[in-house]
Each structure stands twice: as C-alpha cells, then as structure tokens.
Length: 371
Image 1 (tube, rainbow, N blue to C red):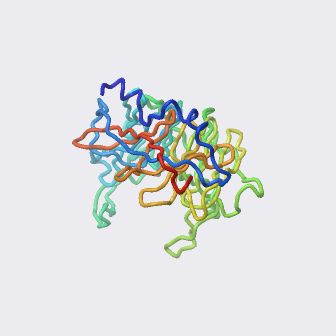
Image 2: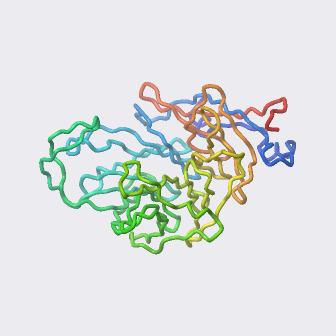
Image 3: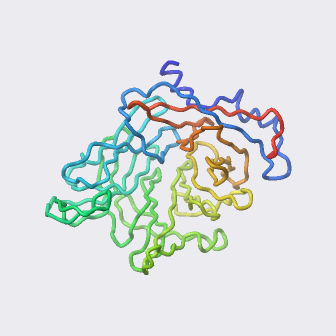
C-alpha cells in the first residue's frame, strides 16, 4: 500500500456508507436493541519521518483527524527526575510535528501537567520558573528512593504555553494561582475552559479564562440538568482533610467542548463558548458507565465498562440515544485514537517504527442478541 492510499484510507470501510446502510437496518423500539459491529484491525505502512521507540497513551485527536500522543525523550541532565515526555502529532496527510517544551524561551524547569490540541493550536498546562536557581536538595527518584541532587528552587508558577499546529511556540500565559487548574482546553475563540479546584475550600470547579489567563467566571450547572454530585470532591485516600477532585476528560465537539466525568453515571456536559452548560444523558444499559469518549468529527463514541477490552457505543450528540454498538475483535486494540469521517484509527510501535492500525467493521450476518 502506498503512502497516499494509507493517508486517505484511515481505517474502516463501509460501502457505500453508514448512512446508506442505516436505511436497511431499522432499530427496534427497545433503545438498547441496536445493530452491533465487530471492529478488527490491520497494519498500515510506517509513518515516515518519526522515530517512535514508544508511544504513550492516551491519545488525543482533533476533528480534522490529527492524532497527538506522548513520546519519551532523552533525560534532561538539569532535571534528572522530571517526566521526560514530548508531544508529537500525526495528521491525516501523514505530516509529523513535535512540540518541544524544553525550547520555550525565558522559562526553566518546565513540568507538563496537561495538554489539549484544537483545530488552530495546541496548549500546554505547565509549572515553570522564570529563573534558574539551582541548589542541592534531597530528591525522590522514580523508584521512590531518596537521592541527593541539584534542583531549581526558584518559585514555580502555572502557565499556559501556546503552540501553533506545526510546533512553533507562540506565547506563555501566566495563570492566577488562586484557582488550581488540573485540566485545560481551549475554544476556537482562544478562551480557555479549565477544570480544577478552589484553593480556599478545595471545591472542584469548571471555569472560563481569558486568553491572557485571567479568570472570567466559574461555571454553574443549571439546577436539574445534572446531579449535584457531578462536580463534587472525592475523599482523599490518605485520610487527610484534602479532597482530591474526580478525573475528567475534555473532548472537542464542533465549537463546543464535552466534559466527560470518567467512570461515573453522571451525564456528559457540553460547554459552549459563552459558558452555558447542557447535560447529555447517555442512554446506556443499566450499570454501564462511560470510561472515556473517543474524539470524533461526528457523533459521540463512548468506551464503556463492558467486556475485557471494552465496548464502544455511538451516541447521538443531541440527546444521548444509542445509534450503534461496536465490539473489538479478538486481540483488538483498546487504544483507539479517534473516529474521523466514520473511520477508526489507532497506532502501534515496533522496532522504532510507528505503524497505523486500520479497522474494519463487520456487521453480523445473523441477528445477534443485541438486535
């Protein structure tokens, strides 16, 4: 298969289209009696221009099909115990870009906390210092042992680092420290959506920030739209008074952002650029919970806690109703990067090469129990 064919294929072949097939697959009145597909994968040709000894999931993906992932990089002698990860991206046309945080000017000891790729840029949430003040300290190595070594003891602050999609650094935006951010995303307008906690009372918050990092407002879920516990703290497992906040995932959806409250029965929260929140209640079987959303340029693809590898449900973005159900073929990958133009895509590494994985959906010839 040549490079052009691989770049255009990007997975799943359904003829002539899913939409056309829908007309021949009526959905029974039972909302959970939906057509079931099995996804099996085959390897494509190596992605050129990328040395990939390892790819560290989870993946992120933009609606144009560009996939972002972590890659290990050589250790930094100035920060021997820092996480040595670098973000790279691969587009549908097989263009490869990297985002080297260690090349950002006037910032030292940059520690990546989170990142988010949008259709126009890529933003990183980091902790960093404006000066390099090295001093000998007792440090904790990755194996939890205590080591005596040099560390930058200058004051560290929270920043958003903005790159364009080609990996060129654009600006560093300092964030108000009163609101401790753990998850960050960006709207097409440049306004940030952030998730974190208020340092004064440890309460979890969703907030809108200006493009200069200043707080616009905290967001409130309309009464009755979602459980009160949807954005509440989780008791610390260390027995202290501090409560850790529940993990969330940010997924682009057109000009909006979907907030996924992982592994809970809470609804999905769709936030628009004005800060309005709409709850989307997934019509899943009893006891099923969404682990993650797979980024998509169409409907919502939810990986739920069914089976050893997991089951994927395609949900209607408008009302959360189930449209289709997907299962992995035996030996299938659990790390699907995205769904682009109704095609699934994943990757694997081998012998320093990054190989795309293309899936195909096989509709069962005989009626399955789900039908």
